[in-house]
Length: 125
Image 1 (cartoon, helix red, strand yellow):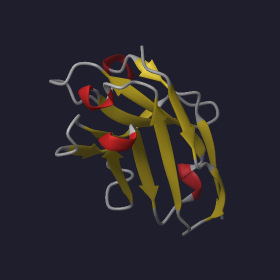
Image 2: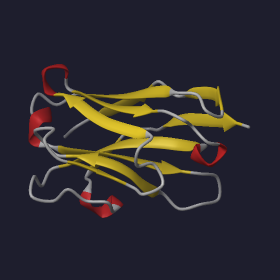
Image 3: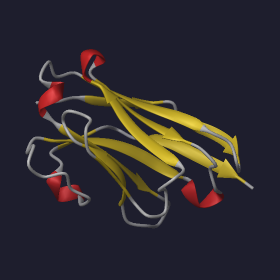
């Protein structure tokens, strides 16, 4: 069982930056691939970024590539999402997720077994 707690959300103007953090309870955090998803009001949850258990491999949605950076610190049991050049269309609740299968670095919610409660990001124009 892994408990995930996101932090760092807030309100920012377009062009600004935010850093989201996801703290994990598991001592085996380094065993999990990690991801970030987001869900805007009235829309389905969508993939944002993923990072494998070691941090060596990352994967981004086209909509955030070049603006967002996913990273992790296994010593601190924490995953991060650096978001730069934010746009109003980035407004959503952002969720971190943990996937127990190291061989799958997925972009679909079904590949992740554990989820945080979400943190709101609002970007104004």
